[in-house]
Amino acid sequence: MRLRTPSPSFVISMIALIMASTGTAVAAVSYARNAGKVDGKSAVASTATLKRAAGKLVATNRRGPERGKIPGKFLAGVVRGQSQKFGRLIEVVDNANGAPQAIAGAPGLGTMTVSCNDQAPRAGVEDPRMVISFANGSGATINLARRAGNGEGAVTLMQPGAVDTFVVGGSEIFDVHVERNLQNLRIEGVVRQDGRGSAAAACLVYGFAIGV
Image (cartoon, rainbow, N blue to C red; front, side, top):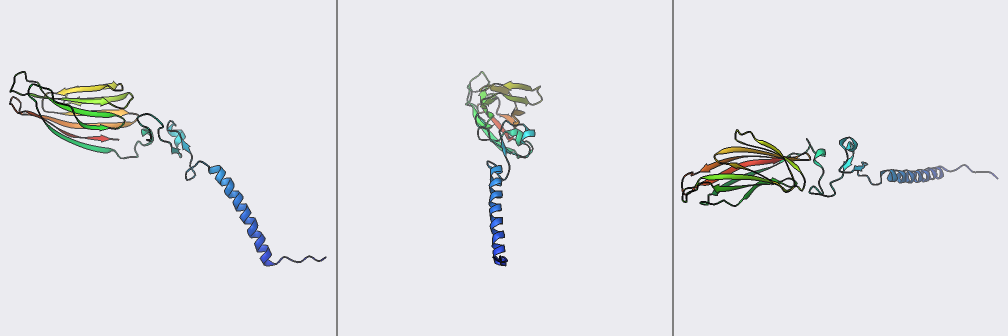
């Protein structure tokens, strides 16, 4: 029996069939190798070191006050900070302490409040005094440093739920720096006491806060 030479169309068909089969196999192997990856990159836990996370995706925090956020150590020097500005003119209540008013803060760190109190003992004569407080709302320990005017300043470790308070008795500037896990909040402000010795004194506070 004489064998016929395959026609060109038959040869082309066979080559196409082989290439299609091979491509499917390669695609299957590639899919298996890249399963669970995004754009070919694997993910590491939020607790991974910077060395281990290099070239990989980073998972957000699973629990705690930073739940759903990428840890700050992976964002240092990358993201821009968020800024806030504040300004309050608070009238003195004669022979009384004023209610605290929130002026700045950051999720995962805490909130700063101010109150304008009357430190004069005589009725009808007001002497304003501003009380500035920072409440640790992070649920963890944080670092805090502060200074008012040319004072010595203070550096402290704040426990969860703790409140750090200082008093500005005259017109002065102040600076507060809070940090936790490379998340920073810097608050700079000015306090001015108006109408001292009168019956209509007030506290003015203004400034800004930057979080990075």
